Amino acid sequence: MEKILKVEELRKTFRTKTKEPGFRGSMKSLFNPVYKETEAVSGISFEVSEGEMIAFIGPNGAGKSTTIKMITGILYPTSGNVSVMGMTPWTDRKKLSYKIGSVFGQKSQMWFHLPPEDTFELMGDIYEIDRSEYRKRLSELVKKFQLEELMNTPVRKLSLGQRIRCEIAVSLIHKPKVLLLDEPTIGLDVVVKNQIRELIKDINKKEGLTVFLTSHDVGDIEKLCKRVLVIDHGKLIMENDVPGLKYKYLSKKIVSFKLDEAYVPDIEGVKIIKQNGTGLKAEIDTKVSSVQKLMENIMKNTSIVDMNISETPMEEIIENIYTGGGDYGKD
Amino acid sequence: MKNLKLLMRYFKFNISAQMEYRVNFFIQIFGMIINNFFLLFFWWVIFSKVGKFGGYGMEDIYLIYSVVTVSFGISMTFFGNQTRISRIIYTGELDSYIMLPRPYLFHILVSRISLSALGDVIFGIIVFFMSGYAGFLNFIVLIIVCTMGAVIFAAFNSVLQSLTFYFGDSTAFSRVFPEAVLSFSMYPETVFNGIIKIVLFTVVPAGYFSFLPVRIIKDFNLYQLSEMFFFTVGFSVFAFLFFKHGLKKYESGNLIIKRL
Image (cartoon, rainbow over all chains, first blue to last red; front, top):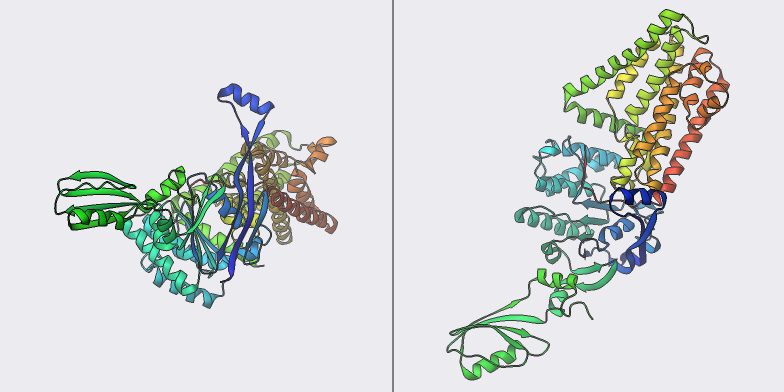
């Protein structure tokens, strides 16, 4: 599939003034400023295919926003290259803006005191959409995002969920090819979150929209994206497909048994977490042992009444990647 | 042309937004008119005592006030964001403008309308008809020169506020110079000469904001009008390029932003 986004060796350095605390520090920095160079993004490269939904995650301050801002042409990079559909964002800004839509969960595009319909109208004008085309697109979006009832209520009176629905719809008014979502579900309840995810999925499928998503919500990543990029300290520390992430980096499985008689197995790579009568809970390191080995060992001695295998939750995997614990991301 | 359409769209847009609070809307407009009449009262007291001053009389003061308030009013009404550019830069609000397919500086300027400034325009027109220079043709000339003055004032503010790209927040600093332009503009041209006059036609362009337009209305000539026109265009281009250059240093921000 064709690559819609190419990022090569992208780098961004910020120069910040350092200041000692207090009034003396302020005076000192006034007459003799000391600058510190911070590298927010240090040489990352990746590619995104057309129609792909990709998650871009990392702890706070990892360089996610800076990267997105360079992709959209908001920031000039210190060095490196970005190509979105063959365009360089910071030089082809205008041309590119017709192809990109964006929703920044924390920056509203909607006019606070006016009903959403007005913002739609304004955006229609800004993107110079032909009137009949505009009306067709608007009714399409209104129907899909169920905005009929909200279109005439001032935005300040909408709930957060309703507002985000409007934000996403308005970002799609000019039929962009790429949609950038920066924490779109921040602060939403579970039901609304799922609703938003379904909508994004649907548009991705029907319009072939490429979605580039950053989020701290594991659900967004799990339910929407097939591939995930993890960034930390300005570096890409991992690139993997989402099911693979679970599979590959999941070296531990938790198995609970209900046995016929009490039994405690002793195998290398199996740690007993809890043993209570005929109940047994063990953690298997799948690099050393396996579920099968454990079961065979047990069944030689007694029989299994019931069993349950569970995986480490996605949340924990990501936490581990961020904190650098375990073997995650080493290969 | 399409950018003019954008300006009109924002104008309607802002009026509807501010109409949400109707009482406030009218208080703002009438408040400004009354406020300006108080300023004028001060001159009226002086001239009732001295008669003429540097060859200028109360008639001329009316004209100066008219030019300055109409220019300022048009500038603030249609380019209402000109005093907020610094803030827009350091809070990262600029992001959303960069991502839209319009000339960013122009888009920022027109996206906010200050309706209280409409009061200035109304006041200026009333005062114009009180001056000895009222007349249909002169009125057309007034609107033309004041529109150029409005653009100059907005460009001047843009340049000062764009300094934020280089030095961080420049709000306080960039407030001083436009105030100076306004203060100097309120006096007859003959009060100033020598170096001060040079300064007033360069660094603090009160000359182009008030003196030259007043001269054009009093004694219309095409040469002066074209001087005004070329200065307006040249200065606007400079403001745009200055902003564009600053953009390379833009660092954005992550504040939570609502568009009011």
